[in-house]
Length: 229
Image (cartoon, rainbow, N blue to C red; front, side, top):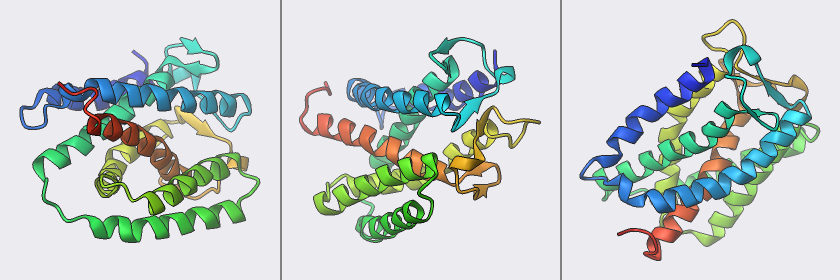
Protein backbone atom coordinates (compact mmCIF):
# COMPACT_ATOMS: atom_id res chain seq x y z
CA UNK A 1 0.00 0.00 0.00
CA UNK A 2 1.32 3.45 -0.87
CA UNK A 3 1.94 6.04 1.84
CA UNK A 4 -0.63 8.42 0.31
CA UNK A 5 -3.27 5.66 0.32
CA UNK A 6 -2.37 4.65 3.86
CA UNK A 7 -2.81 8.25 5.06
CA UNK A 8 -6.26 8.81 3.59
CA UNK A 9 -7.62 5.34 4.45
CA UNK A 10 -6.41 5.75 8.04
CA UNK A 11 -8.30 9.04 8.23
CA UNK A 12 -11.43 7.32 6.87
CA UNK A 13 -11.67 4.36 9.28
CA UNK A 14 -13.04 6.25 12.30
CA UNK A 15 -15.83 8.20 10.54
CA UNK A 16 -16.84 5.13 8.53
CA UNK A 17 -17.19 2.87 11.59
CA UNK A 18 -18.94 5.57 13.63
CA UNK A 19 -21.38 6.26 10.79
CA UNK A 20 -23.63 3.67 12.45
CA UNK A 21 -23.72 5.47 15.81
CA UNK A 22 -27.36 5.40 16.94
CA UNK A 23 -27.50 9.05 17.92
CA UNK A 24 -26.00 10.38 14.71
CA UNK A 25 -27.24 7.61 12.31
CA UNK A 26 -24.98 9.12 9.68
CA UNK A 27 -25.53 6.18 7.32
CA UNK A 28 -29.13 7.29 6.74
CA UNK A 29 -27.76 10.39 5.00
CA UNK A 30 -25.50 8.52 2.63
CA UNK A 31 -27.48 9.34 -0.52
CA UNK A 32 -27.41 13.11 0.04
CA UNK A 33 -23.81 12.90 1.18
CA UNK A 34 -22.56 11.12 -1.91
CA UNK A 35 -24.61 13.27 -4.28
CA UNK A 36 -22.93 16.35 -2.78
CA UNK A 37 -19.50 14.75 -2.78
CA UNK A 38 -19.70 13.52 -6.38
CA UNK A 39 -20.96 16.85 -7.74
CA UNK A 40 -18.25 18.88 -6.03
CA UNK A 41 -15.50 16.28 -6.53
CA UNK A 42 -16.12 16.25 -10.28
CA UNK A 43 -15.49 20.00 -10.43
CA UNK A 44 -12.46 19.92 -8.16
CA UNK A 45 -10.91 17.01 -10.04
CA UNK A 46 -11.07 19.01 -13.26
CA UNK A 47 -9.28 21.88 -11.53
CA UNK A 48 -6.83 19.44 -9.95
CA UNK A 49 -6.02 17.94 -13.35
CA UNK A 50 -5.44 21.36 -14.88
CA UNK A 51 -3.24 22.53 -12.03
CA UNK A 52 -1.23 19.30 -12.29
CA UNK A 53 -0.75 19.86 -16.03
CA UNK A 54 0.31 23.46 -15.38
CA UNK A 55 2.78 22.32 -12.70
CA UNK A 56 1.07 24.31 -9.95
CA UNK A 57 1.43 21.13 -7.89
CA UNK A 58 2.34 17.50 -8.45
CA UNK A 59 2.73 14.11 -6.82
CA UNK A 60 5.82 12.21 -5.75
CA UNK A 61 5.76 8.83 -7.58
CA UNK A 62 7.58 7.21 -4.64
CA UNK A 63 4.50 7.59 -2.45
CA UNK A 64 1.63 6.57 -4.79
CA UNK A 65 0.49 3.25 -6.25
CA UNK A 66 1.09 4.30 -9.84
CA UNK A 67 -2.57 4.06 -10.91
CA UNK A 68 -3.61 7.32 -12.59
CA UNK A 69 -6.76 9.03 -13.82
CA UNK A 70 -5.25 11.43 -16.32
CA UNK A 71 -2.38 12.97 -14.38
CA UNK A 72 -3.98 12.32 -10.99
CA UNK A 73 -3.01 9.30 -8.89
CA UNK A 74 -5.84 7.12 -7.58
CA UNK A 75 -5.10 8.35 -4.07
CA UNK A 76 -5.77 11.95 -5.09
CA UNK A 77 -9.16 10.98 -6.53
CA UNK A 78 -10.05 9.20 -3.27
CA UNK A 79 -9.01 12.33 -1.35
CA UNK A 80 -12.02 14.18 -2.80
CA UNK A 81 -14.36 11.48 -1.53
CA UNK A 82 -12.89 10.70 1.86
CA UNK A 83 -12.08 14.20 3.13
CA UNK A 84 -15.56 15.66 2.42
CA UNK A 85 -17.16 12.51 3.89
CA UNK A 86 -15.18 12.95 7.09
CA UNK A 87 -16.10 16.63 7.33
CA UNK A 88 -19.78 15.92 6.73
CA UNK A 89 -19.53 13.37 9.52
CA UNK A 90 -18.17 16.08 11.82
CA UNK A 91 -21.04 18.34 10.72
CA UNK A 92 -23.74 15.81 11.61
CA UNK A 93 -22.05 14.72 14.86
CA UNK A 94 -21.97 18.22 16.30
CA UNK A 95 -25.60 18.74 15.20
CA UNK A 96 -26.70 15.51 16.90
CA UNK A 97 -24.75 15.90 20.14
CA UNK A 98 -24.93 19.68 20.54
CA UNK A 99 -28.27 20.73 19.01
CA UNK A 100 -28.75 23.78 21.21
CA UNK A 101 -25.47 25.57 20.64
CA UNK A 102 -25.84 29.30 20.02
CA UNK A 103 -23.67 29.91 17.00
CA UNK A 104 -25.00 33.06 15.33
CA UNK A 105 -21.95 35.08 16.37
CA UNK A 106 -19.70 32.74 14.36
CA UNK A 107 -21.23 33.61 11.01
CA UNK A 108 -21.70 37.25 11.99
CA UNK A 109 -17.97 37.84 12.46
CA UNK A 110 -16.49 35.02 10.40
CA UNK A 111 -17.84 35.94 6.96
CA UNK A 112 -16.76 39.62 6.86
CA UNK A 113 -13.29 38.84 8.24
CA UNK A 114 -12.77 35.78 6.06
CA UNK A 115 -14.04 37.59 2.97
CA UNK A 116 -11.79 40.59 3.64
CA UNK A 117 -8.73 38.34 4.01
CA UNK A 118 -9.62 36.61 0.72
CA UNK A 119 -9.90 39.97 -1.03
CA UNK A 120 -6.49 41.12 0.24
CA UNK A 121 -4.81 37.87 -0.80
CA UNK A 122 -6.33 38.14 -4.29
CA UNK A 123 -5.29 41.77 -4.77
CA UNK A 124 -1.70 41.31 -3.61
CA UNK A 125 -1.01 37.91 -5.21
CA UNK A 126 -2.63 38.26 -8.60
CA UNK A 127 -0.06 36.14 -10.44
CA UNK A 128 -0.42 33.11 -8.18
CA UNK A 129 -2.76 30.52 -9.71
CA UNK A 130 -3.42 28.62 -6.48
CA UNK A 131 -3.84 31.71 -4.30
CA UNK A 132 -6.16 33.58 -6.64
CA UNK A 133 -8.30 30.63 -7.74
CA UNK A 134 -9.34 29.36 -4.33
CA UNK A 135 -9.34 32.68 -2.52
CA UNK A 136 -11.65 33.97 -5.28
CA UNK A 137 -13.92 30.95 -4.87
CA UNK A 138 -13.97 31.40 -1.10
CA UNK A 139 -14.74 35.10 -1.47
CA UNK A 140 -17.61 34.39 -3.85
CA UNK A 141 -19.11 31.78 -1.52
CA UNK A 142 -18.71 34.14 1.44
CA UNK A 143 -20.56 36.94 -0.36
CA UNK A 144 -23.37 34.56 -1.37
CA UNK A 145 -23.91 33.36 2.16
CA UNK A 146 -23.51 36.81 3.69
CA UNK A 147 -26.70 37.80 1.89
CA UNK A 148 -28.43 34.42 1.77
CA UNK A 149 -27.87 33.64 5.47
CA UNK A 150 -28.96 30.01 5.31
CA UNK A 151 -29.99 28.65 8.69
CA UNK A 152 -27.43 25.83 8.59
CA UNK A 153 -24.50 28.09 7.73
CA UNK A 154 -23.60 28.82 11.34
CA UNK A 155 -23.25 25.07 11.86
CA UNK A 156 -21.04 24.89 8.82
CA UNK A 157 -18.68 27.53 10.24
CA UNK A 158 -18.22 25.41 13.37
CA UNK A 159 -17.72 22.33 11.19
CA UNK A 160 -15.09 24.20 9.20
CA UNK A 161 -13.17 25.22 12.32
CA UNK A 162 -13.27 21.71 13.78
CA UNK A 163 -12.29 20.12 10.47
CA UNK A 164 -9.18 22.30 10.22
CA UNK A 165 -7.48 20.12 12.84
CA UNK A 166 -7.71 16.74 11.00
CA UNK A 167 -7.35 18.51 7.66
CA UNK A 168 -4.02 20.01 8.74
CA UNK A 169 -2.81 16.67 10.11
CA UNK A 170 -3.54 14.91 6.81
CA UNK A 171 -2.17 17.78 4.71
CA UNK A 172 0.85 18.05 6.96
CA UNK A 173 1.76 14.45 6.18
CA UNK A 174 1.05 14.95 2.48
CA UNK A 175 3.25 18.05 2.28
CA UNK A 176 6.29 16.46 3.90
CA UNK A 177 5.92 17.04 7.64
CA UNK A 178 7.05 13.46 8.38
CA UNK A 179 8.79 12.40 5.17
CA UNK A 180 12.11 13.29 3.51
CA UNK A 181 10.22 14.73 0.54
CA UNK A 182 6.56 15.70 0.17
CA UNK A 183 3.90 13.37 -1.22
CA UNK A 184 2.28 16.43 -2.80
CA UNK A 185 4.57 19.28 -3.83
CA UNK A 186 3.64 22.89 -4.66
CA UNK A 187 5.18 25.27 -7.16
CA UNK A 188 6.48 28.24 -5.16
CA UNK A 189 5.66 30.55 -8.08
CA UNK A 190 1.94 30.03 -7.55
CA UNK A 191 1.60 30.21 -3.76
CA UNK A 192 2.20 33.02 -1.29
CA UNK A 193 4.90 31.06 0.50
CA UNK A 194 3.35 31.32 3.98
CA UNK A 195 3.07 27.87 5.49
CA UNK A 196 1.65 26.23 8.59
CA UNK A 197 4.75 24.09 9.16
CA UNK A 198 4.78 22.50 5.67
CA UNK A 199 1.21 23.33 4.59
CA UNK A 200 0.60 26.25 2.20
CA UNK A 201 -1.78 28.77 3.79
CA UNK A 202 -3.93 28.52 0.65
CA UNK A 203 -5.04 25.05 1.75
CA UNK A 204 -7.32 26.68 4.33
CA UNK A 205 -9.22 28.45 1.55
CA UNK A 206 -9.13 25.35 -0.64
CA UNK A 207 -10.79 23.41 2.19
CA UNK A 208 -13.47 26.07 2.66
CA UNK A 209 -14.21 26.14 -1.08
CA UNK A 210 -14.55 22.35 -1.20
CA UNK A 211 -16.59 21.78 1.97
CA UNK A 212 -19.15 24.58 1.73
CA UNK A 213 -20.83 23.43 -1.53
CA UNK A 214 -20.79 19.78 -0.38
CA UNK A 215 -22.61 20.66 2.83
CA UNK A 216 -24.89 23.08 0.95
CA UNK A 217 -26.07 20.28 -1.37
CA UNK A 218 -26.42 17.83 1.53
CA UNK A 219 -28.44 20.24 3.67
CA UNK A 220 -30.67 21.25 0.75
CA UNK A 221 -31.52 17.63 -0.06
CA UNK A 222 -32.19 16.73 3.55
CA UNK A 223 -34.40 19.80 3.99
CA UNK A 224 -36.50 18.75 1.02
CA UNK A 225 -36.75 15.25 2.51
CA UNK A 226 -35.78 13.71 -0.80
CA UNK A 227 -33.26 11.25 0.48
CA UNK A 228 -33.62 10.40 4.14
CA UNK A 229 -35.76 7.40 5.06
